[in-house]
Image (tube, rainbow over all chains, first blue to last red; front, side, top):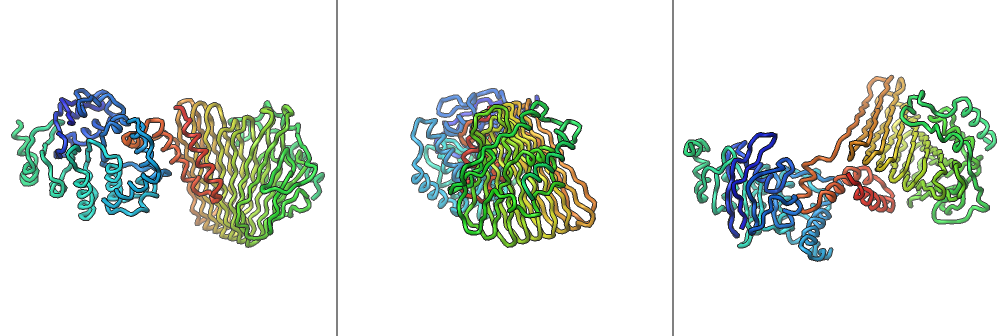
Length: 249
Length: 387
């Protein structure tokens, strides 16, 4: 189970998260929607351990283990994965090499042996097939010279390879064309299983047509102001955020 | 020219110029004030015979062994130098005159074919004399329509008080393709390197330097474009830590129109290391349609490290494209976080990004064996960066 309890975070003395609480059970997909500046991406960053937010208050627990005090790499190796809204370029390091390093870092953290290079090669090719990506993608430097869509698909490839327990998708649908959105959605649905927990951050209902959430949360001013089933996203698209803000008041 | 004539002319020039002082614009930040005696005390050990080997070995200033390759002439007979080399008026540092005055051999490599395999040149010293300087003088002449790739390993063994003062002259004649790599690493003493490069019509040259784990390195590179349509890529990577120092000075003379020169240097600095870059691009009157681009980039890992960057342009011609720039900065915390979020530690993340910074230059090395060596070396060096 992935639990966030009364999470508060600020930057330069400005409060961004004002007490977020949510629980994602194994097998569940949650979606967070909210207007610009509501704190959605900050939530994703705080979950990943971004250094801009040094002393967040509250708890983040994965299967009962507090991860809020862990370094980002430790959180990743515990099974937390953030698909970045803006993945960064790493020139000089090819995708395959980077993924192998990341994969083996997790193996080492869990006291497991490094993966055999041939087994890794087979595994990564299998995952490429899920995303309908070409093998040439692997020899290119990580995200360097990639289109926006390629970067997002690369994030999903990393997710498939690292096989995390908890996935936070921060606006993964932004910058994707219709075909890419479907491919990425199919890959996430392929990844979904009864022990995975997925948190989708998005502005648009269209992603949720492909990946059906169990629970939708509406976030405003650093808080979750309403939660409901998937129909909430449709209502939101129809009526906008103001209605919910008024409800809150 | 006879060797004695060269030595005498050089000695006269050096006497007139003297050792560099801080009054010279190119020597503002470090001068060899405590090394005068050592620099004038030359160590030379003549090889008894020049033996056959896979690589060219120049030891203690003398040609020791060489390969036999069709289309390549390798000799220490000074009469084999063409009139185009040993041009005194191009020497940019008085230490290069001192090198010529003290060198007992002028090693000339003349390429008169398309040489497919890279030529390795090992410049080394292995004696135990204290406080002396090993002077090596190497000329490479690539004849018209010929191709050469060569990698020069500047190594030094023996006493840490031994200095090296090396002069390198490269003549790229018309329609040539030349790749030259210089590797300066693992040197606990001071090394002076003077390079002169001549570019002729439609000549194409990639010249890359790599400096790592070297106490103090001073490079003076002087390039002249004599004829049209020549292209030179002058690039380098240096990794400095501890109290290491690297002073890199370029002078690019565009004496002819319609030539291209790209200068791109990257330096990684940690601890109390110092790096100076000074690059002057001069476009002479009438040298139209010249495209000269200069960039010096520095990655700083320590508050105590010092980077000095002076890109300069002097343009006396119309219709030219010249740009120069310099960046000094640290690793982007967003990039470090991204890599950490994939399970790699902070030091692993920094090492990856630092390698990525340098890789752009390393990737352009055409000698695949050398490239593989440097990829391993630079990954090892950057993984040791502490800050």
